[in-house]
Length: 338
Image (cartoon, rainbow, N blue to C red; front, side, top):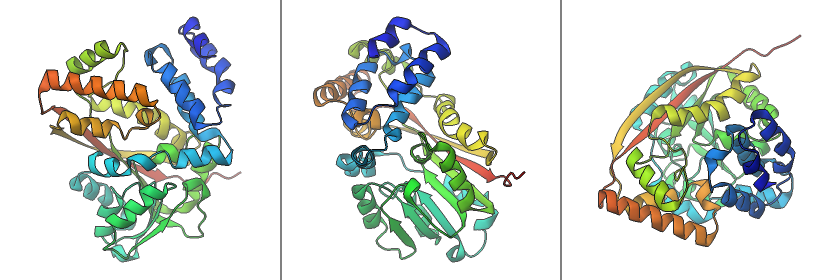
C-alpha cells in the first residue's frame, strides 16, 4: 500500500480514492504511527486529500482500544503542552467575545460549552470572565491539569469525554473550541458531529474557534532543517505565514461546518506577534504536536536533536519566529426543513 503511493506519483482523485478504504482500515495507534513514519519521508509526494485521510484514520476506528489510544494521545506531554503551547492573546479573546451578542449580558448567566479544553489554555481566560462553563476533554491528564489551573473558579463543570460522547438538554449561548475542533468533527461521523453542534447552540449563539498556530522559523532555517533531515517539509505546516496556516483550517474545519448548510463563517480575527524561544524551548513545544508524539523513539530523538542543532547553528540561543493566532466567528444558520 505505502510504496504504491510514491510509485503512482500525483494522479489526483485516482490516488486518494483508491487508497481511502485501506487508510480507513487502520485500527490501532501503532499502525497509524508506522504510516506517519513511512510517509514523513516526503510528505509533499502525497496529495492534500491523502494526507487528510491518513490524519482522519486516527478518528475512524470504532474499537474501544483505538478510541482509548486516541483520547489519551497527549497524556505523556501534558506538562510540556501547558508550558510551551502558545497562549491566546487577551485582546483576541475580548474582541471575539464582543462578536457574540449572547455574551453581552451578565456573564454569570451565559452558558458556554468548551470542546477540548486541554490543560485549560482557553478555559482559564473564560473562567476569569465569569461565564458558566461546561468543558470537555477525553484525556484524563489534560482534564486534571485544567482542573488544577482553574481550581480558584467555581463556574466550571468538567467532563472527561469527547464531544461525540457528550449529551445535554441545554442549548448554549456560545460554543468555544481552542485549537481543538478538528478532533471533534473529523472521521466518519463528521456530518452527525456538525449537526450535533448545530442543535446544541442557541439560534442567536456563535461558535467561536480560537487557533494558536504552531510557530515556525523562517524559510532559510526550514530549508537548513530539511537538508539536515533529508526531507522536504521538516515542520508541521511548512509555512511561517498566516495564509499557510489558515489554508489547512479552511479545508479541515470550515468546509465541513459550512458544506451542510448548518453554519457560516461570519468573521475571522487575527493577531501576529514575534517570539524568541530558545532552541530547547522550541523543541519542547515540538514534542506536543501530534505527528511528533507518534514518532518512534529513535526517529523522534534524531528529529529533535537535528532540529535543535540547526536552530543553535543558525540563531544561537534565541530563535525569532512569527506566532499567529486567530478567532473564527461562526454563525448558526436556520435549520433546513422540507
